[in-house]
Length: 504
Image (tube, rainbow, N blue to C red; front, side, top):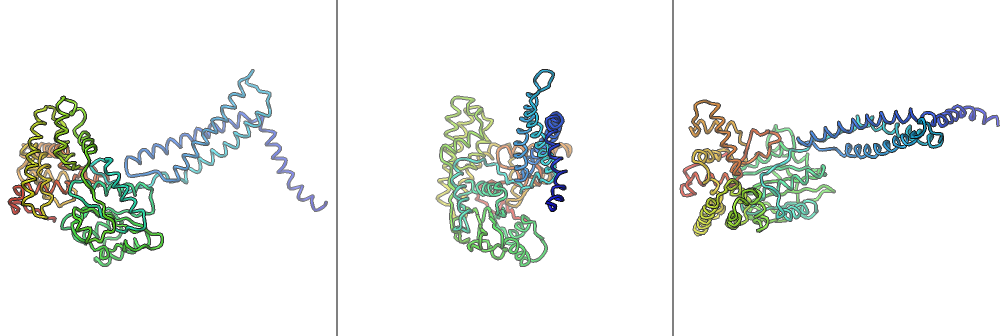
């Protein structure tokens, strides 16, 4: 009994404090509920600030972290619970002189308010430790919108990326059919998967692209040290990727790239849980063979429904409905374009402001002539010229330009394939060649920029993929459009020495 005295003596103050707290609850109900309301308002203000930060992040290249998603979910729950407690208190006081004799109900509300107040304060303090946004890689945008026809290809490609069977996947098909668009969709799906375990690297490999350039582009994308020889860079890339899951996306391959020399760990070998994948696009199935592709995915032209939907989107419903005969002529135009997405987009943009049925009739005549040219050309074409029949169709958009803009367009092909074109540099080139002749410099720039907008409007120039880095100061030329520009400049392939453009 003597031994218990010290223990009991130390417990008595604690017990007394607890009893006093509980006895005081009914008499502190107003105080506890007001404290909860104040903390509730503070939490609501923090939630608004976080949501505003997320909205701003979405305009750039930020994404919400999993931490902040969980914090916002907790806020929603606790806000609802706090609101219910406050409402119970208001109902309790709706009696004569705002006095309620129900001590037990007061006790319950006051005690709940005190506990919830502590939880709200804890959540407010937790906000300071939560990272709100994570910066994502810049999205790779393309002026070719998604269509249902791409979905099966995308699913097939993603299935290959996620399995353990195919290390190298080849996406092939004719120029302008949407291979690059599909590769960028794969990039975006993997990047969106928040940050799946994959390191995703997208590299464009234009014609005559050296292995050193591919290696340097990969070094840049991985943000590794650029200094050193090819062998040293090879080691840097290999050491960075060897114990990671990665997907290397190579766009527009024209020949074999030695992955080992560049520093890419062998994608045919599975190491533990790491997945090593290479996905490439090419116009030639022979390149698939040279790269030892394990799974080939052929991208074909669009079916009628998808082709018509894409064309209508570019022409606009307003134009198609401007005259009863225009829809019939528009359907005939789509048939002439053969389901080629790039042709549907460029011709659709060229026709978006044509509200006269005679203009549509003339378009059909020109496109039928292009078809005849295709047939005639196919009798003499060489394998290296296999994409040239497409140029007869794409040239329709070029033919609808004014003569001064035509010359400006052709000179865009002087930039290397796949490169970003600075708008000021382009306008200054046109000025230097005498293609723009205005009284003063500012007027010349204004004319030059209006030409660029016109070329973008008909899809002969497009938004730069790196617009999130370069802003809107740069544009690009689709590789097939650039090939067509050189083909036109060389008198439709007859005089191939007329223009020579080499990457500098």
